[in-house]
Amino acid sequence: MSRNMLIAGNWKMNADAAQVDVFVKAVGDALDGAGLAADLLVCPPMVYIERMARALSGQPVAVGAQNIAAEVEPGAFTGEVNGAMLADCRASHVIVGHSERRALYGEADAIVATKADAAAAAGLVPIVCVGETLEQREAEQTEAVLAAQIDAILSQCRAATLESMIVAYEPIWAIGTGRSATPEQAQDVHAFLRAQIANRNATLAQSVQLLYGGSVKPDNAAALFAGADVDGALVGGASLTADSFLDIARAAV
Ligand code: PEP
Image 1 (cartoon, protein in one colour):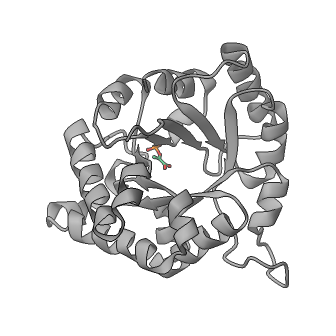
Image 2 (cartoon, helix red, strand yellow):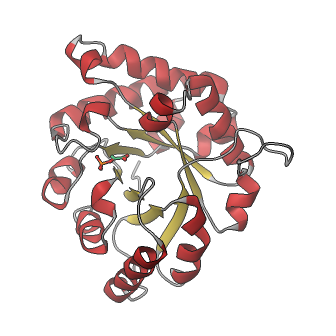
């Protein structure tokens, strides 16, 4: 089965309104409404989602969120933003289970699965992140760690969530370090993840997009994308400027 490539930018807690405007102007000038071979998505800080989405209307670039409330219904959840609100702001995707949210905000597998379900319930595509630490890789625990993370999603999420989700493999040791996984390491893990998914649902395993994330740059993107099971990238630092984001996207053919 042929799967589309997706290049997704995760801006984390970076940029301001002026930088959003500079980025969308540069993307608009470069694309001029014409798509690339890869689908494009940018996830800015939540407060800039609507500004970015409005400015990019007419451009082949979707806008997403980096977080979502676990709760679906409105209520007394101070500081939270639910899926319906994100959809109102024109978000189409939500990143869940990023290693920074797991490590800094205590979001374990169960809450990641709940948030993925909350995203799908609001019509948003959940991008579910999984990944191992350097210590786990060096102890040869990579597959066990990833199996536990993906199995939690496969066993806890609703069928409709699984059908809409994207999975991002992000080795923690590669995020923001400048040390990307090698193309072979990325492909090996993606093949492993696809096999894990196939154990539960062979059709889903063929259709689900598997993104690689961790120090993807214009100069290593093409080699990473050559992996048969690598369906694009989740890009942090290099997604903050239009030039490097689009150069990475152009490497996806
Ligand atoms: C990320 O934040 O998900 C990420 C992959 O960051 P970077 O590309 O900067 O390593």
